[in-house]
Image: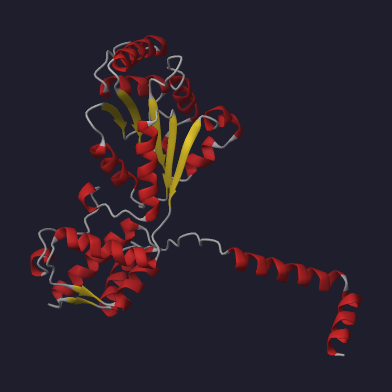
Length: 314
């Protein structure tokens, strides 16, 4: 493939969640720091959300690899489970007896395990990826599991990672008891233009410290506009653009090459069409509000408006 042509050890834009390629934007750094804080301080519940493709799973892998031997983790990445199935899966991860078919017996086994680990001063963590797929019954079961505690410490720390829908579910009226227990919340926003550029260069650098490829400013802008700063979409487009440059035997990724790659992706119904939510500018918001008030005033008080205009001209 093209990686050898560009002096790379491997393709830098593969879609697998390889922790070596994690680019820490300010939001990723914040989320990782909060997760480490949650573990070190024994927080009961933490929640990490982010749009599809923003690097949540990769962040989870990096977090898990950063843990020391004093921490044991049950990592659940397929949460389409019933309450009983979830506890069975948790017990399996911790190598606890999971043969029972009722929640009481399963939780009893889990509680005994947690108490023994706490005596050895171990941290026990349950990390659930794709948590937006959890039913409300299962989320309620997780709330009950968070009640496993001593008089001074939580026995189990729970981290939920999922798409923004997870936050909507948790903030619903039925889930208010669970929402009150979540002490740490972080959201992974898409990258901005500068971060998109740094992200691409970071992945190229990881693949090779001496790459034989360059990208023009126009290429970076087109990649950003197409992807909206979503890392997964950046990867898809960059991989295709690098392939296009390889086919043309060029060592520079230009805006023209990126545009060709975009056309090819869209012809195969692989389209970005995701635009990151604008980070609100307070000054702009105030100006827009002022304009709305002025228009409403003109509509409902035309006589006063004429008087104001006359005095102003005078």
